[in-house]
Image (tube, rainbow over all chains, first blue to last red; front, top):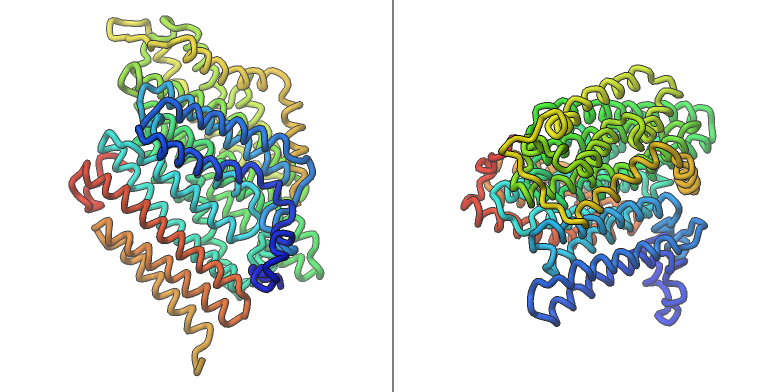
Length: 518
Length: 102
């Protein structure tokens, strides 16, 4: 049994040599942590409060971090000490880190152009860097302690971002609900973790997967632990039945921050969830006796049912509730819940050995596309808040005729969110459905399709307002500069290009990345 | 340890956790809710330390140290946000947080 404290047993002089294997692979995370301190110090030393310097400093920092992630070695590296592996830096982690960092960079740009000053405060950037560092660590974590610390880092910074510079009672209400429900759910998750840790005697995901999936039904404590832990994830990913906080938080927070939470925070939950699930097929294949294999497949089937129920509940609830919304930002909040449901559909299939790689590829590819299309939609909400003072969908009336380039881009983004061709959203959704159909879950797939049809109704609302209504005297145009327009065009291009061609190149790259797990 | 077994400590942990859940659900005061959350976290600590003591695996005790640290950070974050809300709503009763439907 590896103890977590081998360092104490060693002579002080040899510590540095034995401290960590492959410490260098952690460079992106270390750099992000260093940026937390750097920004804090710059703010302190300047002592003159907000400055446009800070968003630029952040952007520069994120670009460097992206460079560090990309330049990292291609082979999977195990980071830890004395044989105890705390992290695995591999393709899956690298893919998710890029998703987090790109989302972070776009969020900073959105805030800079949102016409509000909170992005110019050093503290805000400190919190953002903390959040990114936690997410990046989470994407590589392979044992429970590091996972828990990183998970809570992402949570706390999320509360702070949502509650930063509240200008309205709504924002205050959203942030307080987020922090209270969030703390309760992570306490429940922690209780589950303590049971798992106690009864399996290990903190490693891979060993836990083996132990958990060969438990006899007569030992329920472990299953209670697993269900509680699952609840904590479901909260973070805004999955049924823990999705209720999401609309209030996303509506109350500033639009760019809501976009960041909807994409990066959700992707963070999936990054570690997928990694844990991915250990299951290997653990099943390694079952020593037929009885154990039998037991294993029973337990895996139970977990699969849990995920399927969560998936169906999440997407159906999200889509049905989105139908009634008149505010674009609140509608996007419900739509992000629905998208978590689609992703859970593929997550359930990661448990099946023959489609595991396909399902993981689909999740990676979809999150990559979701980044562009969802942030595109939140960029529109940011612009509306800045120029129209409202995010009500009816304020878009006739805008498509007045600002055709903006209108067409937004329509492409909406079509992609619905999952219709010729956009990347269609390709992504097809990949999410493929493993489900191949494994014979026809009813499950049909529910997903019906949900797609429902979502068409509410995604078409802004489209109807923009193009089917002529501008009237109430129509105010968005005061878009060249940069604002360039940003929405830049977010639309990947959505369109990956829908028309080139999706196979990206899919193959994602597949190569996720195949490294295990 | 006399007649005390692991089960005694796990039952204590479960009771403490349930008390925390009750406080969270029944308390109308945001500070009371936070205290309930602290109880839940400390129930986890009882579990962790008990497992560590009875199985001889030090991981649990190390984990508990991290939990103590994170609980402090969490209380700081939650209190700062509730203070912020107080300046807007002039109330710390969770019943008053009802402007949105959710």
